[in-house]
Image (cartoon, rainbow, N blue to C red; front, top):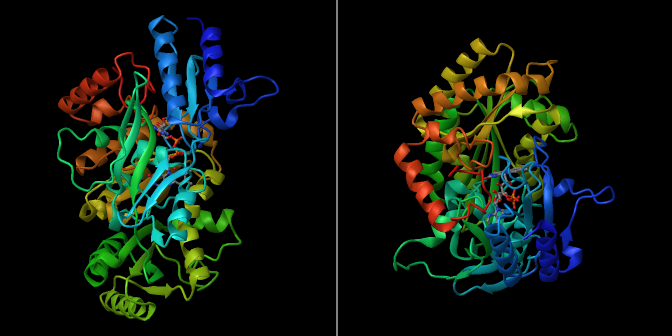
Amino acid sequence: MSFSTLLQTLQSIVGPAHVLIESADNDLVQYVRDWRGRERGVALAVVRPNSTEQVAAVVKACAASNKAGSGVSIVPQGGNTGMVVGSTPDASGTQIVLSLQRMNNVRKLDGGNGTITLDAGCVLQNVQQACFDAGYLFPLSLGSQGSCTIGGNLGTNAGGTQVVRFGNTRELCLGLEVVTAQGEIWSGLSGLRKDNTGYDLRDLFIGAEGTLGIITGATMKMYPLPAAKLIAFAVLPSLDAAVSLLQLAQKHLSAGLTGFEVMGQFALSLVGKHFPQQRVPFLGTAFSGVVAPYCVVLENSDQESEAHAKAQFERLLEEAMEAGHVLDAVVAENMTQAKQLWHIRESIPLAQAQEGLNIKHDISIPVSSIPEFVRVTDAKLAESFPGARLVNYGHLGDGNLHYNVQAPEGADQAEFLETQEPGVNALVFDMVMQFQGSISAEHGIGSLKVEKLPHYKSPVAMELMRTIKRALDPQNMMNPGRVIEV
Ligand SMILES: Cc1cc2nc3c(=O)[nH]c(=O)nc-3n(C[C@H](O)[C@H](O)[C@H](O)COP(=O)(O)OP(=O)(O)OC[C@H]3O[C@@H](n4cnc5c(N)ncnc54)[C@H](O)[C@@H]3O)c2cc1C
């Protein structure tokens, strides 16, 4: 089957208006360039189905065309906010971008079961709002929540700022609906918390980055809204102190600790530089004079009352100050201030993007080893790449750092990336391995790290993954070249 016959078939499935083809008048940049602006691919077409049946028919048509030798493949896409170049087409012009954005309905909200069942294209922020309006909390929370989708969150097993209490997206998911690589619909939208009837198919598709099938719907857990949510912003003498504060916070707040984010001084200074309208405490605006090597945002969600939450926070911070883990701290007085404090943390990736291209490392290390890892790796980087600037921040409560490397001040950033990225990556990832960590904590592998994975994952694990991929997608049609080469 030729591409033009395939495109006609796709038009008959989703309607001509929803098969987008790049032309002088039709710039598809939002679908074909990755969020970080690292790569721009070429799509055979962007296809926008609006139902699971349409997704299945599109996949069937592509599989038939592929069998006839066309070489077409499919790149599932949600909000295209992924960090590892996994949701945009390559340069071949043979890939269909399958955008789920039109599939954005809440199918069912079941308060008694504590679940919400959704189309995969629902934007995360709208899901949070739908749950909130019904009196529930949907805890998944990311800086990209205004654009990213539940399908993308599941595809990447996204983490975010509430993992310390609620786990990754995987832990929030009870059931999935998936269109397989053969175009069959697997309806596994169970709201069950217990179901031991064989292999866990759901967990295979979560975190597969669209390489095994297309998630079209999901049943997700909801939680009771807290009676009060308090945010503290603390200034710390060191990263060791941050680990000690985390332990203390877990002891004092227990399940109430719903966020624990660490931010290095340079990361915060970028927010101050690129978003000067934001008041960053301890950076000289709110509390002049105090310059902290590290700051932490802590969130305490309390099921009792605001007074209870405040008393708990005060006891925690008092003890932490006495022990020397905290130099100073501010607790938000109201929701507006709380949002402002969170916004500082959420602005770091955006401020970093404004500063220019950088080399990102989304790594995880056992929490207790993080200070030593940073000490040793900082020193090695300074020695091998003099002047390189380290943007260090992340979800310390989950042992997850965004340990990013920015070119030296005034250097040509693109040239730094081109010439130094392989060396910087090798140094950082080798250190991650020495500390028994992972080279991808939450962003995934995409095409950016696909060549590195075999170097850092055991041969047995790689072969098991290849076996699964070949069994579920024998034509290698689902997001090929991402996660694993077969
Ligand atoms: C400012 C900012 C902050 C971020 N913060 C975080 C953070 O704290 N934690 C975190 O984990 N990530 C974070 N991210 C990364 C990103 O937002 C997440 O990975 C998110 O889950 C991607 O969702 P998406 O809908 O944009 O997916 P996309 O970018 O469109 O796709 C991501 C991957 O999932 C696959 N995919 C998409 N939809 C489906 C589907 N329906 N079925 C199967 N596969 C699918 C794609 O093929 C691709 O491989 C951040 C990104 C930005 C820009």
